[in-house]
Structures are given as C-alpha cells and as structure tokens.
Image (tube, rainbow, N blue to C red):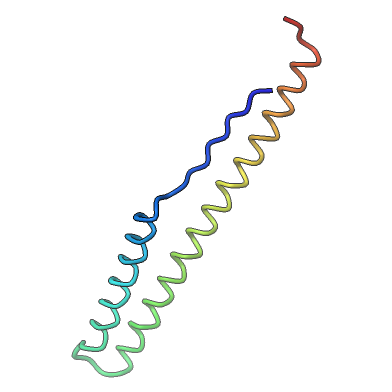
Length: 92
C-alpha cells in the first residue's frame, strides 16, 4: 500500500511574524481608538466592532482549517478503500 503523507509544518519564524503582526495591528487599532477625537460612545462602538471583527477572523480561520483537515481524512479513507479493492480484485 502506497502512502503519501505530507505534513505542512510552518517555521518558528512564520509563527513569530504572525503573532507580531497581530499584536502590532491590535495595539495600533486600540491606540488609534483611544486618541480618536470623538465622544466615548463612538469610541466604544468602534472598539466593540473591532473586537467582533477580530473574533470573527479567528473563528473563520478555525472553521476553514477544520474543514480542510476533515477533507484530508476523508481522502485518506477513500484512498485506502480504493487500494484495498484494487489489491483484492486486480492481479498484475
């Protein structure tokens, strides 16, 4: 039975870059909201909207990753079934 296993591993530098970008953008937005020259209700609205957008991005990324990982498992099962069928029914 042939096995094609490829695990996608990101480098430590990629993780550091991703977290640095997140922290910088999050901090920049919070600082921007704090120094915005509007009333407190408007600042609160922007802050809540920003936090909701960040939460939605994390949720979307997780759902997309989960869907991709489940499709890999389904493909592995289908490949195993096909190889088993071929090995039982086809003689070379």
